[in-house]
Length: 347
Image (tube, one colour):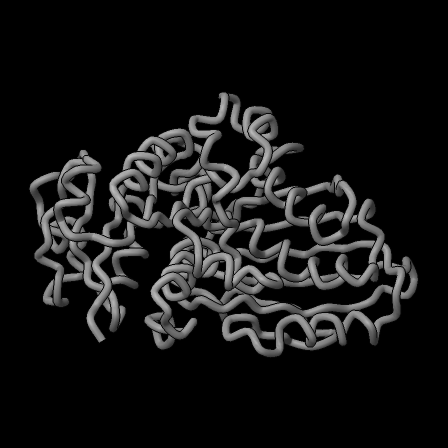
């Protein structure tokens, strides 16, 4: 099979670096263009020595320019750019005939008013919102939508860990949609490469703290997707925490149980038994980040608190993997007509 030519726009951050790693190892992807204003003119393996001697690691960074990306021969472009910036490149690349997988928040929300509320600025490309597909392949019917899409909005890391355990229960009416409370813990790489001292080693090491409360930006897409599943507007409590680890997300969600414990188990198995990257741990088992880091798996366990009448959902994933680059590669595989696990097993 001929390899699909790809580009990574904004390839110098943590997510960009993980995308590069996965694409360099992907049997059906050819990396044709990588962009970074900071590193333009320098080779991948000079900036990321871990890639030295891998085929394609001598590719040079270029400045981000839509026409240059098009001329590289790339057919699909991954955007690993900040919100507000990604939309500009998405619009230009789509006009040039490329397909786009955007890892920013620019196309995750259906309502531009919600985008402005949570991101503090008017949406930069509202005309594209109606065609953007929220790229969570495990949701019912979403794989086909992704496969047919020109523009995929790849989900955030926290939302992936929260949405996947909850959606099957909401769709079957097994929990009260207005009773959802979630606490998540993320490694420091989730903040991206930043000069903010709060995320420096001396501030983050040996410390755990909540942040971005009570209205983390990811809450917008979480409530959007849960509302679709529930068939009513969902408003929930979400508290993210920073933990002294490089990567990994551990999430605990609880909600008032309306169904039975056996129905919870059945709903999760019906939804995910056939999904390659969802591992169901079973009732009474909690998820552990050490089992998912450096993989594209999300592990889900659950329990029922008979005393309070609440169901507890436990999930873990790699925020740079299933929560970002790996999930974007899943969408790439669907668009390219490849098996879902292509380039994502044994990584």
